[in-house]
Every structure is written in C-alpha cells, then in structure tokens.
Length: 334
Ligand code: GDP
Image (cartoon, rainbow, N blue to C red; front, side, top):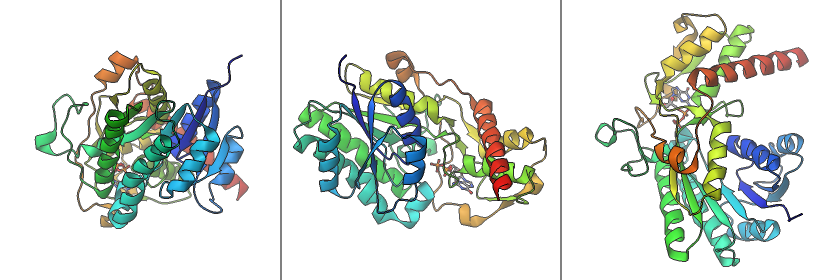
C-alpha cells in the first residue's frame, strides 16, 4: 500500500481546523496540526476529539517554528487556516492582526519554499469574503465572484487581502501550487461564541433552559451569506485536488439578515416574537460595517463539482439543536 498522504493544518484549534482534520482523517491522511502558545487551553480539547492528529508547536509569527513544522510533517498538503479571524477584535488589535493574518501567510509560504518543498507541497490559503467589503458600488447583483473588486472594511479584511495577494504572488513567482479559497461566512456547532450565529444559538438554548434572560447584540440589519463549515472544508480539499492552483469562491448564493437568523433560531424553541429577548448594545457595533455579503459559487460548482448541502434553515436548526443538548448536559453536570 502506498504511504498515506500527509497534511499540515495551521489553525487546528479553530472551527475549520476541526472539521478539516476529521475529513482528512476519514480520507486516510496522516494529519498534523500546528498549535500555538505554551499551555494552550484548547490543546486538551483537540487531543480528546482528534487523537489521530500529531500536534506541532509553532506560531505564524515565528518563521523558524514554521520551518520546523514543515520539516517534521513533510506535508503533501498544507492548509493555512490560522489567523486572527474576528472582525470586531481586529479593530482593537490591528497591529497583531497584520502580523498574524497578513505577514503570517508570507512566513508559511517562505517555510515551504526555503525547505525546498515549493514543487512538492500544495498550499491552501484561507482568503475571505471580508475582502469585498459589501459597499454599494462594489456589489454585483448576482453576488461576488472571483473577479469582483476588493474593498476591505476592517483591519482583518485588509490583512487577509495581503495574504491573498502574497499567495497568488508565490503561485506566479515560484510556480507553487497555492490555491485561495474566498470563503463566505461559514458557521456550525464548532463556531466560537464571539461570532453572531453561535452567540445567538448558544443564548437561545440557554434562554430555553432558563439559564439566561436575554441576549445583547449590535446591529441586526447586516446580511450575510451563511453556509455550514462542514460543507466548506470539503471545498478546500477539492481545491487542492484540482489540476491547477486557482481562486475559488465558496458560498451558498443566498443572503440573510441577523433578524432572519434570530427568527428561525427562536422558532426552534417555540418563541415567535423574539424582540423582548433581544437587547441592543452599541458595544457590539463596529466602526465600519459590512452591510451585505452575497457570494456566487458558480465557478466552484462547475470546476470542482462542489455544492453546499446544508441550507440556511438547516444550519440554524443544526446549531440550536446542538446547543440545546450541550447546554442541558453542562447544566446537569453543574
Ligand atoms: P463577520 O461577518 O466575519 O464579521 O462575522 P460575525 O458573526 O462576527 O458578524 C456578522 C454580523 O453580525 C456583523 O455585521 C456584525 O456587526 C453583526 N453583529 C451584530 N451583533 C453582533 C454581536 O453581538 N456579535 C458579533 N460578532 N456580531 C454581531
């Protein structure tokens, strides 16, 4: 039997890292994960949930640690998912965001190149719909595609745009297989509660169980193209199996407001009027907002044969059901 393919995932403790590790393991890969920091509190969780992952200590802002991680894992495929990934946080920590989310990509690419693996390791770069910015003049009716203009509206979006272009530059300069996935918002049961969808489903479950009275949110009108993260990591994998490196938008092709998300989430617990349970708090509003994001996944569907499976109501239901069970279990232990 041929040796198993090896994959290195940066951002193994994040939402997509978990989904991707499970997918690659299922496909027979030997999976390595880069883990940051001394005593990372999320290490234990990764070890418990994904015992098959070999963890390697390293940090996107430490180039030598990346060289070592690439040498140890000698990967056929490297998925660069690590980043400071929260838009709100990036306004408060813009320099760190630039160091990790922008320059970190360069450090990863250099680690592959200087260890002589430019022609051996296929690289996936996690680009984002936040690079588009959602401004009126920049919004095509059918949704953003791979040719749409970029106009990022946050330090996170700006940093990701550097990552996107340096990835393309290494593809063109060194003939490296570097694919960029421009992913629209993707959520699920692994999403952090700092993101609005999980914050809502987590709170809805706790309201149902009498554990909290209400939820504090910022603006409710922004619209997002929300898909399921489990579907999206499959698209990442497909990008690295394609004959050539390219850019692909992954999205659902639908956009919904936070109000719509609230309506479906509260309906899952039998509440039709959610207004009494939602408190608006300016602390959760942003200096610059992305009004609406809508992606056009036609290229990924036609070229990669990728299609999302979970639709918007299915996503809300899956997340509320997960959080109801999870919160009930935690309340029983406490
Ligand atoms: P983003 O699209 O990557 O910024 O994902 P988020 O889930 O963090 O935010 C999605 C949208 O929800 C943005 O327009 C936020 O301004 C809006 N929003 C409203 N209230 C909240 C809140 O309490 N937390 C977060 N994270 N976002 C909120």
